Image 1 (cartoon, rainbow, N blue to C red):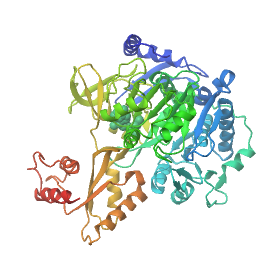
Image 2 (image 1 turned 135 degrees about the horizontal axis):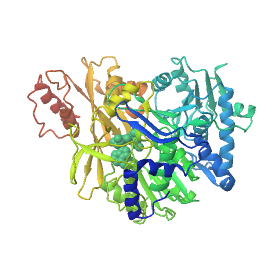
Image 3 (image 1 turned 120 degrees about the vertical axis):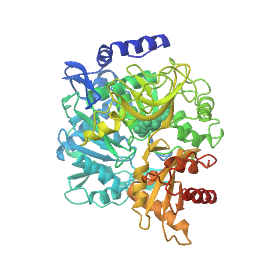
Image 4 (image 1 turned 180 degrees about the horizontal axis):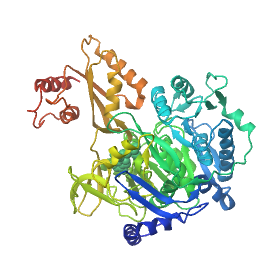
Length: 631
Ligand code: 7RM
């Protein structure tokens, strides 16, 4: 299944385009199926309706666990590195992980979870998080993991949207020198969640928590009451595997739905190829399992390939900026997959934290989540890879399930800040605003995909029309990514960033509309407009223009109140970096905010604002420019 030369890539790519069904059937035969498919693919991008491996039966956990037991039962599946470097790390072999998953699957059953039920998981980065995810998959329950940084309200919205029956959480989480009271946040969330029947709580920080009789129980007590035998539920290839919420340009986050068969094949195939994973190697992805990168490239991709996946509970700068490099040295990490924001933040500490660290185990480096600038690319290449490790700049999305455009390590010649070429089976196309294809090289356009791939989303939970509208209605017969893209003279792809109202802050997708709604909920705020602006470390920062009449002398306090409101409504990750109080927003006569102007102001580049003659009141622009200079 691994591609070993550029010629082989080119041949494989051609085949995957000319005979996609034969190609993917061949890849899929490397996995374990209880029954093979009747039909490889049926699809249309209008409804949309996409089915891969119809008629096939499988359980993804048999691919991630059971099938490795006979020969690799004692191979480490998960290596866990705690937040506190003084604490012991933990290794779970495939045999031990299998046992824990089966046990916890029985706990879920005992608490009333059945095939098809939705389970919300809100946990720190501990091995039990992976166990909970896999336990759901074992019994055919649908997991909905919510990142530990989201607020009670965000969790409640997600739980209610999916009508979850059970929550799995922990008392608290350690993050650097902070503690997060997870159970307390869940308690607040559950005030408004009538569908939740049971809450299973893992002991981790051992912070005092309230335990509600009849609803809440301890993980540690529950697993004593069950045995470790849990046959894997037989799933249809197109049965739902999980829901993961992600932000778009409008309204509330959408529940992106992935299904069992296609997702498994795609996550496993791309993991094996892009990183050129070799048996016995230690692979470290620094993402959180609360995001798609953690789902596909900490849990399902690596485990489906029998890999050793390292899970890190903490943050790159705790206890100091050497932490990643200490982990690489300690666990002899061979493959390191991280985000440009982490690279830029560590780059800011210079080379001292890297000096004296033995990074010679590293073989492949990866980047994901946002465009990587050339400076960060070179720093990663020189300081970390010692110019001896290929960098795979992997472009993909929650909706794509796995990596789409990326170099294949040791195969594709790389170019700084380019995601390079599409993986086999992926057919990118650039279009103009009207949806007309932009052919040839040395061109820019909106990035779409014109043919299905096994890992693509199938729907958005509970609202198929929203899926159609968001991804399949902008351009006829194409999946629209929301990204702008350049194809250079060599046919290499460079992702230039979102072309919609989504901002990418430290690799996290945040909808401007969501942040505006949160700001507008603050008492005293009349209206607001949010845009992204270039930020040295985060990639993009959040800039909010806020109308707040009757602002007292103490602007600073009101700013903090607004930040607190956003933290309450969405979570700390959505806090604006800058707030500018204004008396009006630049609106057209039809009432649309001209974000183009606000973006320019936020960038600090007001020399050429373009045509502002259609504005209702051009004077507000002068006011905004004047005030922005004082910020
Ligand atoms: C995996 C993930 C998706 C958005 C996507 C892009 C941006 C991701 C890259 C990138 C440039 C990359 N899923 N993005 N990877 N931009 N180069 N290598 O991040 O759903 O959370 O975000 O992230 O804008 O549309 S996501």
